[in-house]
Every structure is written in structure tokens, then in C-alpha cells.
Image (cartoon, rainbow, N blue to C red):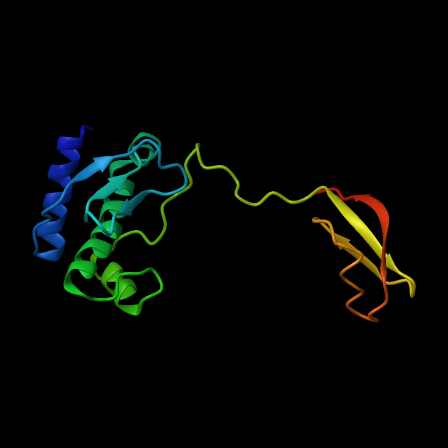
Length: 158
């Protein structure tokens, strides 16, 4: 699908579901990795991840288009347009748009669990495990307020 075909599809969905025209540009953006699409507030343009069509089907792309059009039309009308807003959620349910885009092959896990912690011990025996270092000259034990000492590294299996 080309950008021109995408523009035509977005225009059709906008007229059919919202009864309003889409007056800006819709394009594919290959740099999008973890999202299906985005609405640009300053330009009012829509960008879509081409993997929504390549890895999934046309129905998935249409669901993402509807989602972004809800942002677009709500914002231009002055209605709350963010994900957490009730107006956004109700409009998305009305048009049967997708709430979340499926994960693509390019999306990487955002949460990496640390495998090594720094261990600190106070003179009363309380242990503190931290990923980041603590300045032992400035901070004290949160339980008994005693001075801390660095006790080495602890390996943790994820």
C-alpha cells in the first residue's frame, strides 16, 4: 500500500465513521517501532507503522486508523483526546477502533531486569540492594539511620 492509497483509506474511514472529512496528511513512517500510529498535534497529520499491514492484516491497520482519527477529530473539536479521557474511550468504542496496537517484530522489550545489584549494610545488619550506587557519606540506612558500608555485588538471576 502506498501513501496515496493510505490517504484515500483514511479519508473514507473518516467520512464513513465520523461524518467529517480528514483534511490533513496520512503517511507511513518506518521509524515507528513500538506503536501502531501517531497523531501529530502541531501539524494534525497522522503517521502509521507499515508493519501493521505487513505483519498483520488490513483489519488491524483499520483499527489503528480509527484510533488515530479519534485523537484527530476530538482534538480539532476541543473534546478531550487523550487515552485516559472518558470522551476518547467512548468515541473509540462507538466506532469499534482498536484500543491497543499489537506488538510488532521490531518492538523490543522496554523493561530490562538488572542482573547485578550493589549491596550495602549498616552496622545494625540491615541490607540494602540497589541497582545504582549510593553515596555512603551522604545517605544512611532508611530503617535505623545508621551509616552505610558497601558490601560488594550480588548476582541475581532474571
